[in-house]
Amino acid sequence: MPKYDIKPLTPQPEFDMMFYMEIAGETRIEGDLLEEFETFWDQWTANSLKAYELKNPDGEGQFLLIYLGQDAEDAIEGVWQDSPTHGLLFHALAITMVMSTAQGFVPELRAGKCAPLPRPGEGVLSAFEELGLTWNEEGSVNRKYAVLTPYPYAGGCEVCYLSHSCPKSTVKAQ
Image: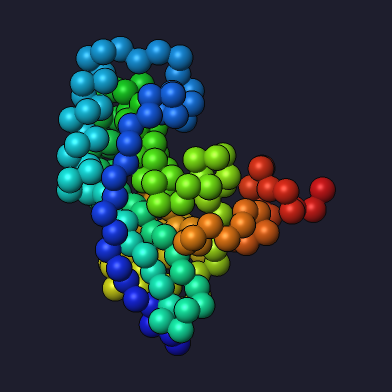
């Protein structure tokens, strides 16, 4: 089994209001909520947001892994318990953060391309284990807010593990 090199990256997500509003499905956000967003965004960037390059030493297979840790998930759950409406907005904030980070590393995503989920091999699964993560057979890791995608960009639906179930897939049988 190839052992993947795990290289920590420095995530630098940029908050793009229009991108957030698209994800949240909102047309306006109140100022006091934006101030709360800023506090959480800064805390998550400093303490919870992780980004790694997973690279097969033989040069075959390289991936970008980004996720928010359990502390961010717990914070969102706490907001959700107080106000489901605000919880949904903070859920969208976490998605925005992870995807903004991915866009910073994979410029094609800024141009509207999808971040395809590869089928992880044994080496990637071993890297997950080393990072304290677990792969679920339905095609996700045990973090609610995470992205695993080829790095650099290597195509869309044709390399995606979820292409058979994705409503945006261009390769699934009609």
